[in-house]
Amino acid sequence: MTYAYERIKADIRSRVLSGTWGHGVKLPSSRDFAAYYSSSVNTVEKAIKELVEEGLLSRDSRRGTYAGEFIAAGMSNPERSGLIAATVVGIENPVWASALRGMDDEVHQYGCSLLSSSDDGSFEKLETTIKGLIAKRVDGLIMCPILESGQQHANARLLRLLSDNGIHTVLLDRYAYDMDAPYVTSDNQIGAYKLTRLLLDHGHRSIMFVRNSHLPTLNERWLGFKQAHIDTGLEAPSELDVFIPMQIEDFKQGFEAHRPFFEQKLKQLQCSAVFCANDQTAEAVMICLEKLGYRIPQHISLVSYDTASLNYRLRCDVTGINQPFYEMGRTAAKQLMGMIRGGQHHGVIGHLCQSTLHMGTSIKQYS
Image 1 (tube, helix red, strand yellow):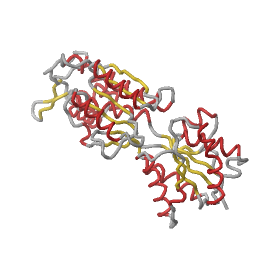
Image 2 (cartoon, one colour; image 1 turned 135 degrees about the vertical axis):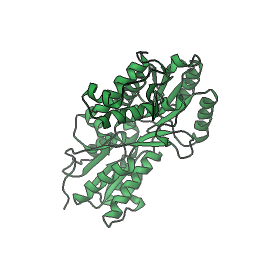
Image 3 (cartoon, helix red, strand yellow; image 1 turned 90 degrees about the vertical axis):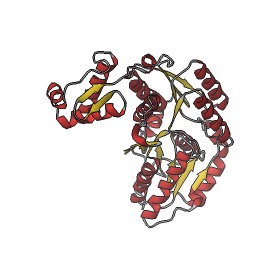
Image 4 (cartoon, one colour; image 1 turned 90 degrees about the horizontal axis):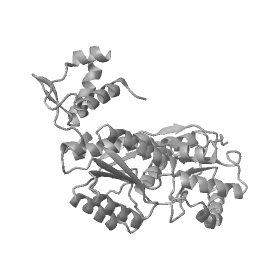
């Protein structure tokens, strides 16, 4: 949804960027703006305040509001290219495509262009891409880092390489606690908490948590899973956290080798429900359950993260959490533009975007 102040903010920004209001030009008062936009003074004030924080406007409490020096990343500084880069796991995945749209919509407002690419989960490809972006003199990079085991030092090296070349970086979705870079992600712990409480409220008491990695984002979802149990007066023993290691993002075929282990865990834990930590895990689990003769939700309930992508691909209706990838992409771009201009956007290193709960048909009341 686009709010009134965002339309006002976008219009004022476009006038400054186009040069209609050049540097030093005094802008109309908030009251005059309110009358022009048929809005309230408070709404106008909110838009102006954010533009001041972004460096596009300057304000004097006695004299008024003025257009700032900044025009566009590539125009205001001859050393800047006006190019913003983004590298994600897979552009063909709808969730990443949505994030890229958010980035593009945001950087476009500043007169910049977005260069997007996919590393396909390959660290070698990511490193090659980053070296190419440095050669292109991009102003900033939004990156979904590869956090596989043993890559911690390699990621730190890439961040230093970017920093040494004057390229600001914002991490998207994934991050590591020891990576010295701002990041944007979703409220993983809260989302997992809500999803787990939903299962518990439906009477499920033995819920398997299935994941394919120990990424910080998945660790946070496990913490939300555990906290929901605690708040319900139950325990969430570590045995419920079932780790099935995979080397690639799309691991439906690889999961087949773990089917006996998965079946053993289902029977051992006497699970009535499965919590899938991400959509790739859910797709593999659903295929496995079908081969084992389990029907959802008649025989077992199932929930997952990123169900929008899952339901779109499989034409199903799984209950789960949808991350706001468009908003995450746009927020990351906004944070990056603030860094490029020398500001401290939001004043925090990490930003959480709110996820939403999708009520599908994959949960059954357990008695």
